Length: 532
Picture 1 (cartoon, rainbow, N blue to C red):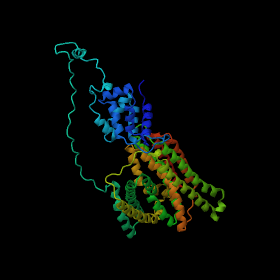
Picture 2: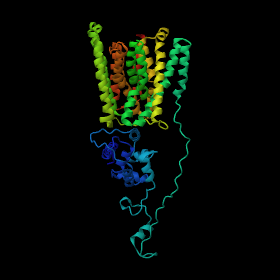
Picture 3: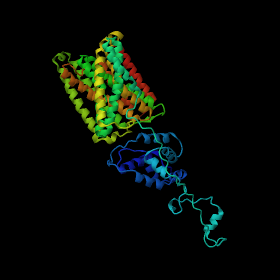
Picture 4: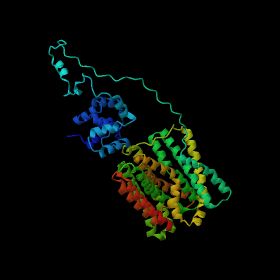
């Protein structure tokens, strides 16, 4: 009976467990294939010009043992291994041969290294008796020579010709590439021209709409620069502290805009921006990511543990949003006594503590459950102090542009006839998270669906459990009554969106049409916010 793909994946997880790795990569799949001992597998290796035992020994030498020895860990497939499995699963035919074909396309890493060294072994040397296979089409003259008769050439059997040895050529020196710049010019950075333009428009007392548009465009490159500086800091500080930095500064631009608006007394706009950020990440960004990821593959898969935890945390956030609003609707007479505000402060403390516990869970105690393909830093990594300096300057720039944007908000709503609810639910969240959202969609289009899912769901969770409690605390400091009593429309929109996303993501796979469904829900909510 031919070996099945599911059986090979189980053996690959067993190899990853034995080696102490908290993921399953292409190297573990190849190791399981080479160690299976199946006749069909041996035949597939021979047809590919490889020796299974040689491949196995090479992988054992190349792979280093890891620290994760837990048997109960759910070791997820990395994106490279997931691509191989999807390609083999959708292609009918011999599973071992299809796996070797897909694994042979690796260009780097242990698999490429070992397969490159194992090439040319289709005809093993005669002393490797366990790998020698008799050839039924052998010429008769050679057979008579092995039978030992006293023929024309004496008593000894005719000597077999040695197989030709592969020609050893000197290694070709790598092609010299031009030196990479420390700063990569992304297209969004072309919008930096809007920063001085917004200042000039303010000094000229230009139309509020022009000032508002210029400030919105200026926030985009500054937020992108903050995100890039945070990535370089995370690369310098290691995975645990790096994950904390990404979680803390992921919504920094939007948080700064909300703080400035709160100081200006626009509490309703701030509340709408909180729910709008959650809705934008859950529906708009996740929907666009699913569409981008499904353009090249009919079905793509992602880490179910990440999706399950994010769905549970978002449901907790919905409960935190519902409780103050429910209390206010049942006892409106107590709102003047400040009890709704005190309840909001207690809820904010509970949400903040839960957020800290979730960071410990995902970055420390159970980080093996959330292993996925990393998002590498392009080009050389910035130094510590340059990264901190860029982050500080970008933060100051976002604060200045937020001040300009907020002061023009009231005039813009009057001029265009937009409601503050629409401005907070739709416009401001898109501006504050545009750079991060674009990264998620681009990564999903490249096949890194896990990273896109982490950005979308993780950002939603961070807004609900971190940004909202911080704004409640800032309201106490600046003397603004910032509570968590959201409107019934906002609470229902977040609750229904969370339910839809949970239903779509909990099976661990999706396709482009589910992305269209999420965009449809977002469009209906935006239309309702426009007419409220």
